[in-house]
Length: 344
Image (cartoon, rainbow, N blue to C red; front, side, top):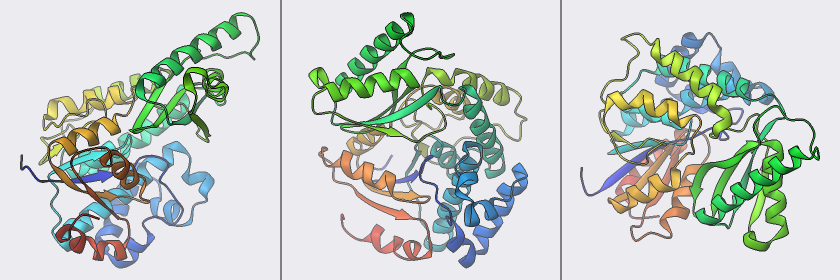
């Protein structure tokens, strides 16, 4: 690989917003065609959902995932066509890994749309409503996060054994779900165990200086409670026809599961299966890319969440990296200037 790398990165769940993709569709036929292709693949009017909502429908996991995929792929393909954008590596955060794989040519948009629709449904069904949740934890290092999760899990188990908590049908556990940036980790698990973790942080002690922010989510993603969803995706992939099987990516991509660059088509489905109930190694991915010469990162999809994470990660690295987000015609017009310009 070249010593100078340009990363194409793709948004994950949480970046969705009503109105996303509307500007692109108003200005580019390619965007309209992409929306049509994805909509036809899953039998859902993604234009209406993304442009008009309602937000309550857009935020349903099974709707959010194909919607974000479609907007992200549209942004990327238009950038390629209109500006000649050529990344050297691709990566996506959680759901965004599917967008990255479409961008690299490994899987088709229609196939990815069907798979992420099924993935969203499987994730939603994996844990009964109210039984699982997530929280963002700030200002603790990885060792403290590990200790926090172990202590909170044991506390939740002990309280269940003595009947101190209301009845739960899922395992008492909390685990790291997203390693987003230094001092920013998301934890996930049973509702009582996550609440125990929040209580431990508030109490100080080994976790003094930490801060916990409960997240409004419909399920505890990327932890062992997602095992039923993992099994569902494994079953779906095992039945994939030859036309759906991944092809060799045309550029390197960094899977969430390993944070190591690869172009091995034979690993893609296995890594997507494991990704469901294992943590997203975003911090580790960006750190590795910075170490191998990444200088610029362009985010495709609504919002600028990943740009913010890359900025935070790169501040503690030897390699400087500038970030840019493409999500509408205005930002698309500035892409070439960003790529030709210096660090921002």
